[in-house]
Length: 151
Length: 151
DNA sequence: CACCATGAGATTGTGCACAATATGAAACCG
DNA sequence: CGGTTTCATATTGTGCACAATCTCATGGTG
Image (cartoon, rainbow over all chains, first blue to last red; front, side, top):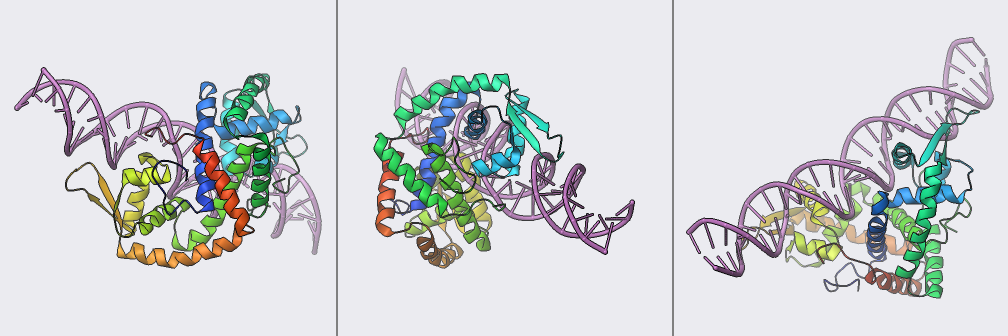
């Protein structure tokens, strides 16, 4: 029982439980990220870039890591570039690929946002063991479902 | 480990696991619903209406059940109306509220879509007990997070 | 070299999600 | 009764998600 509103036809549906939870998590992130004017997906992109220790990632690699397509990432990365958080450069050996890397401002933002992870750890799971177990089950369910068209 | 792409900074993040799973589920539904030209959210609205046995629901009630706001539901319900799947009527006693009900075509579609539930039951969970347990944990996590602004 | 297939990103169009705001109908109050 | 508040829905604007399509560089192949 999600909460108010009483039980409905949706309660036993696993898909709705995931859908509903995802949007509530999104609201929490939106609130936390609002002071920096970032969206959740933008935050994920910065996180992936920051974890890659200054090795630039291509749009394609970002897409594979996040399971997002170019129609989402292309404009999103350009918005991050417009704010000076990332830099986009065409690869010299292959003019088709775009290398995305954090700027100094981007790195600065990343370290500011580190506190945010802690803030969420308290808010989300309940207890660590359960969270770990839930994580494992979610990964298992995800693995059973299709990635984006381009494998 | 979601699958291809190797491990990343995102793997231990519960929020990403939910986000990622939600989109994969969405893709499966999009594929299954494509023959009827329905989106997942439209399908949810029809499901809730169908489960309510011909008692119309207001936009507000739909919003509370689905945890969606009027900015999402208003145009969505109008699209369903344009296809002749639902009817919108102002309440006679209070001209502000809009009553939404399934048309005969809407009922017909609902019964066609019943097979779809079975098709998904096979595809999603793994085993029923685990699915039930996962459902319980997701509800618990959801209950800890905020609903939309208008309680 | 001309020609075609492939592959990486970008663009276009539709729909969802939500904040902020607008509209207009109750409801309340002096 | 006029004025204010409240409440239900609608509208506007931004950004995500994705299918379909486009652009253009690269990599063969004859």
